[in-house]
Amino acid sequence: MNSSIRELLLYCARTKPAPQIREIAVESIDWDYFFLLARRHAVVPLVYRQLKQLDLPLATFKQHYRENAARNVVLTAELCRLVQLFADAGIEAIPYKGPILSLFAYDDLALRRFVDLDVIVRKSDVASARDLLLADGYALSKPLTAEQQELLLRTQHNLQFTKDNRRLIVELHWEVAPHLFASTVQGDALWQNLVPFEINGTTMKTLSADDLLFSLCVHGSRHLWERLGWICDVAELISRRTVNWNALLDRADAADSERMFLLGLHLAEKLLEAPLPAEVKRRCEADKRLEPLAANIVAHLFNGPEHVPATSSEIFKYNLGVRKSLSARTRYLVHILRPTDGDVASHSFPTFAYYLTRPFRLLFKNQ
Image 1 (cartoon, rainbow, N blue to C red):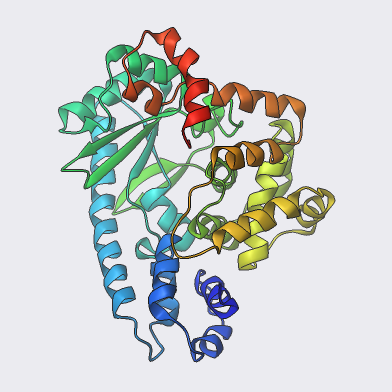
Image 2: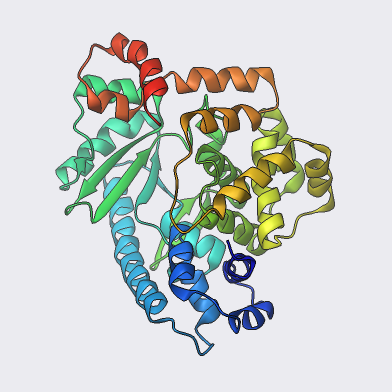
């Protein structure tokens, strides 16, 4: 990839103005290629905001920006409606990522691209919340029997619902991430550390900056940091919010997820110049496996304008490498052998059979 295109994307994928943008933009840039790259990484809104003052061929960027902003307004209104729907039924719901993250980390609803709404409820409220969504016109995105849903409630951390021909997508979570994948913020701690946040004139509760940052690093690791937009979320959150670094480092260590946490921070500093305190930098430098992991991620981020999914072996190798201890790696091995919604939606088996067929799906399909 042309180094100018890579540099331009990284300078544009942030809210802070960068004088280098004008210098690079006057060069011979393939704007069609640049748009496809920005779209792949879900950063077109950020890029357009940085470039719109320049005399450049940005009609495609502008259209994408406006469509994204309009969709975000619709999804935000739907989020507020759903939170109130749950509240009226006595169900406390926590908005996660989506519109909340756009405002919490970017202070602008239009600057982040999201296509679904993530809502966390207590595990004991999942059945009631599911029934509310179904009564409201939503449907499970994959047809699942009651037995299959019960299985996923034990093995996974969310169910997906859709409405209006997938124009509305809701992820109903009962955990931020599967607990065998990584310890994040769960159980009583999740509900005790909530902070009030106003959106569309409605005050609701959401994750604190500390909990959100830790969760974003785990989320990025679950998806191999395949999208620059996820790294932007981390960088903007660090730049805009005050976090308790000592407490976060202690949590990462106690949760046996230190490398996973530090990797997200290291990528945010490496690519987007996110400000990190000296102790965090020291820990990043002390972990000699961190930079090779980051270098491999960066190479995949800039391997072209179209996303090429990682192979099963690449996913497996990465997930072992991002975990420092034998116990963390063992938990991951247990996690990947647990049935997913793809397993249960593809065939109707007795519960035990999904555990037996899961290894074969891993071997023969790129999941």
